[in-house]
Amino acid sequence: MLDKLNISQRKLLNWLGFVVVVGVGFMLIQPADHPISPEFSTPLKPTASCSSSADWRSFGSYEERIERELTATLSQIVGVGSVKVFTTLERGPSIVVAQSITDDTRTIEETDRSSGVRTTQDNRYTASPVTLRLDGEKKEVPLIIEEHDPSIRGVLIVASGAQDPAIRYQIARAVQTVLQIPLYKIEVLPKENGG
Image (cartoon, rainbow, N blue to C red; front, top):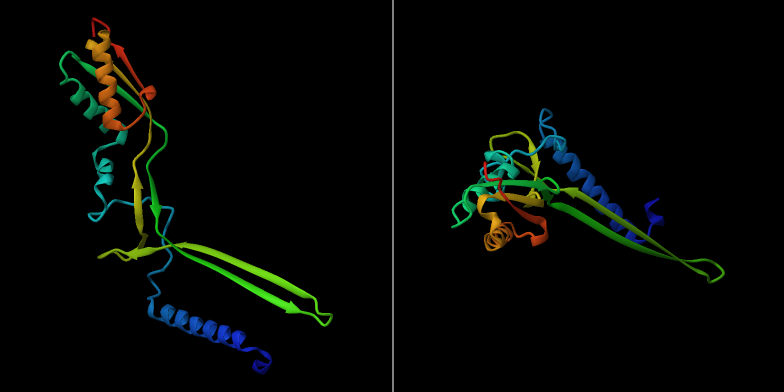
């Protein structure tokens, strides 16, 4: 049967056999009580190796942290007075997981007896997450290459000094600079006299 195969088909068959043998070897080395497949349904917990952008998880919600820091900072500006900040988020945090990508393209040209040429192209694209085994733990987690904070939909600031247009503009520009959002997403309103 192997005599009917051409050289490229024999090489492909040899490589497939090698991959199967290596795969079986890895399965024999892997202990049975520790499955290889990662659990993607459970949320990832930040570890010491995570970047500092994940710090917001340990101090309450991202929204509350932004509101607390903006309130403290804006109330220190001359003429602003007491401040209340309210933020809304567009979406939650997101992560980008490293992937192992395989993109194979195979072209087969066949010639029939009547000198007709038929070309067949086979494209195969596969992507699977790259996983790491954490030290001291017996499970694998995906390799995170990027973490994105939630995007801010809008900010509302109520300040006692916002009756003055110059102060209102200063507050809006300060929030725009800190959060890197456009000015139309920021609303500054004067606080009621009694509050």
